[in-house]
Length: 281
Image 1 (cartoon, helix red, strand yellow):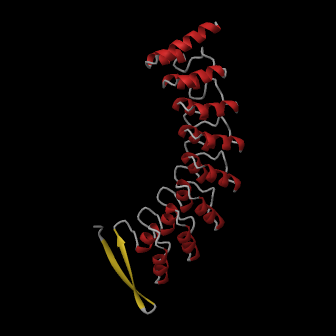
Image 2 (image 1 turned 180 degrees about the vertical axis):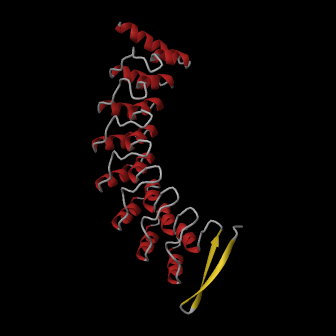
Image 3 (image 1 turned 45 degrees about the vertical axis):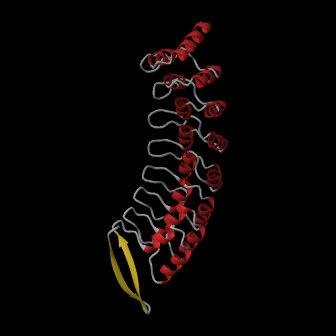
């Protein structure tokens, strides 16, 4: 059982009893996290602070948003809950609602002043979180509200980059339609197409190539063909060749994609690339 301490404070005509477990969880936080609207109202009526925070910095509003409990979210906001109180990692109720795909809660929070441009400690925005989790309608709503499609994390990963890494082709298409930079690279030089090729996501590869993603040597000294070959993605390798990838290009280590595939044990890919190179010589 969780250890804690009881406190009593005279409020009005009766005592207010609050139980704090070791991590700072209060009855109000528990009620909000478990969708107990009447308990939330009763506790607030008895003087519970809607902005009381756990050791992690999370509040009752955070947990209501996480659970998608719209009526509790509304109640807490009406009773003075602060919209943008961050947790230790910088997450706010808006972030967790985006992560859990509760669009109605997100709309309520934004209507009540939640900042869609706020960042977590790693630089991620609500739009980045929506892209990462593949939440299409959430993404469209945030873009319509003015979210910046190219705002990156501290490591320079963009929403498009994370969508490519996760294989969310529908998200990729929406971001590209909204003006996302197709070759926006993370700080290590990897572009969205590089990640899609590395992961073997054929649909994502097609979408990015159609928008003119680079097939040449990238800032990291590799090509997308090298990435696909190294990880054994034959279908992607063929896509890239058909789209104009130069099979003769060598990476920063002076190795071709065919040689890389051979060293990695992907003999079929190595043979295909070798034959392709021979046919073009």
